Amino acid sequence: MGDIAKKLGLRIKELREKKGLTQLQLAEILNMESSNLSKIERGIQIPKEESLEKITAAFEVDMRDLFDFEHFTDKKTLIKKINNILETASDSEVQKYYKILINL
Image 1: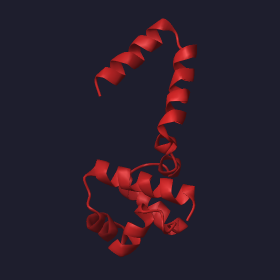
Image 2 (image 1 turned 30 degrees about the vertical axis):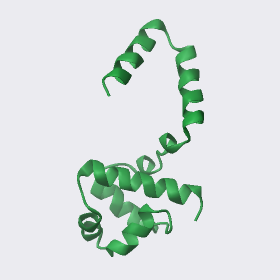
Image 3 (image 1 turned 90 degrees about the horizontal axis):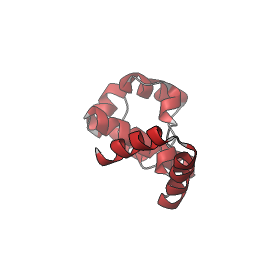
């Protein structure tokens, strides 16, 4: 499968872990075999539209939130994007960003 399938799988796994669910628990909620969920999370299989709708309901997110995986980009690209944001930010915004980063 392609890059999108892998990133979508990582995003679903990220949201599942954030909810504190195991693959088995989420698979039961979705009425899906846990082996199929495992394939989805590994980017081997792309979920059908019906499964995507169930996943969004289980995580209480919008469909677009499943495809919010820009943060899975490589480190060099992310640093470049962060630097671009910082270059155009005001002094107070930079201070806020700094506080966020040191409190992670």
